Image (cartoon, rainbow, N blue to C red):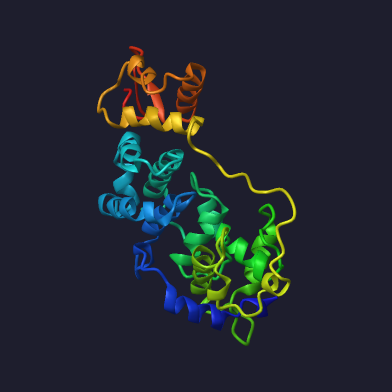
Length: 298
């Protein structure tokens, strides 16, 4: 299996093509890398660079964010999408400041106990912040392994076998222990999936891998259900975003009429979106019946 993605070949390619991303700078604290990983979930890199830079300047350590209100964090999140991520990160910051000496813990198990930290994020921080040789599997890595190793056009549903596949590929020393290059190799696989082995129109002629199983088999088409492409226009997500825009643009609670005006084409949908924002804790209803961002209702 390992011969399909030889570390020397992948790392040599990465040395030439690695993007200059600010969260890859050496010596960054784990907290700032954690922020990047949260922001990058389901969000393109190009949209994250600016907000990430502003956030690490404003909140260079967890206690700085913990001292801010949830509304401050939601406003700073802007239009990155899926704003519950911001709220959970604020909760995480409070736990880190109170219980972990203002520092992101190093071990995966402890990180998984933190608010909003899932398996991928915990492993990514352990790998990229602390240099641990743990497998890190995102959509790009799953696609590269599916093609190069298993000969499939697309990966199947996520499973624990993804971690086993990625771990088997990590560089090892002759004695069998993980080499210090393992974290960089994990980053290289991600980059390969993001830049070359893309979901649509993969650039196989530019790929450094000469033994790709998928190419060897003649690049067979995907067999099985297609991944559903998430649309945005007209969805509850769009309506939620429009409602949040009104509240982010005001430092004080607003009347319901202000919110009703942003989406008049489907009243039940607008009501459903507003109810979901209240349920998620992103929006609060004040005692006098107005609406505001979380933390501004008292």
